[in-house]
Length: 449
Image 1 (cartoon, rainbow, N blue to C red):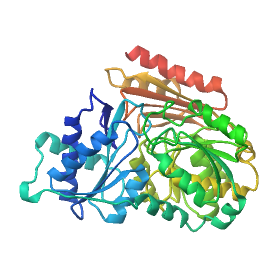
Image 2 (cartoon, rainbow, N blue to C red):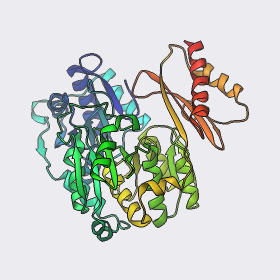
Image 3 (cartoon, helix red, strand yellow):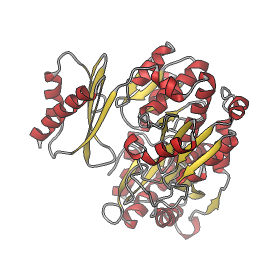
Image 4 (cartoon, one colour):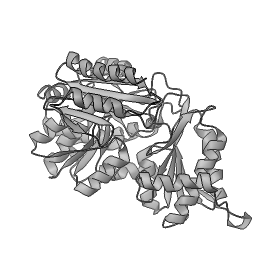
């Protein structure tokens, strides 16, 4: 699968050592030809196949003359920040993010610390087809190791001017955390300790043997909900394997939905900064509600972190992100960042002076249904046209598939960029209303198939 952020596949099927080597070499050649230096930062998450592909990727980068800065087991936002820190030509992350254990992937990062744009990705992939310019024996790259990237990342988070570190530490928050054996085990507990928290954590071993589906959606967080209840935690955090997404469990022991991460972080930032908020077309209306409460405008962009980041840059947004638990703060960097989200949520609890469940309880609750359907062989244009005709009173947005919106509900149909499926996401005041929108999309897709 080729997407805006990179390539991914099931190991041993679509994703083989040969494919990894070829794309890594193409990226390295593209990066050093376009970037400010010959340096490429390399890191991986905790997946079982990570060490194998790490070695292959490092050799592939050296083979085209790139000088590798290896930061080892790390998070995606740490890698993005390391690219900026080293003024590198780019960064390459070995991570399949939330995908199941049999998947792995390469994520390509440009010299600005952002994932490649569509145009940059096309340029890089052209080398795969046209031929990769490998280096001769006397021009091969080298590798050096940087063991301080995570510490620099945490220092940057703690240096944000509107975090009241003294107040957070004085609260001695009791925090539950589920790392799902991802890279977060090496990062989040340390951050919580620096913030003076009492930490109760599960699945910290960074071995990639996920004990549950690794996507931090509500239905996968039962163990964290129980931990919050058992220890009487003020809040529960869960991250995906590469630690760019953050999900929350309230003090009541209930997973409140990953869309609330961005919404609540937005509430904090808008108390200290004035400007628009950018999020994607599949993000809950709760972000609009929280922004409206502070008098801010919400702008929608196509799904994909780079699409949101670029729109944030264009609009001068003060915060943005995606409803999957991804928070982006330009003052830190233009990438989704779970450690950032952790700090902002603790700041929220300090400023609110009340439990998270009480903060959430003051805002409308929406039912959001996320469905995955097999992708038909035929184009989806017929489905989009039929849906638009069926709902003439809706506001249609065709930036990314089709999103139909009303004042209190919406439905979004789009082909996934990470799996061979079509995503149908709907939100409404009740579960029945949201399901009805999803079922309409399912019916039309079935006819197309």
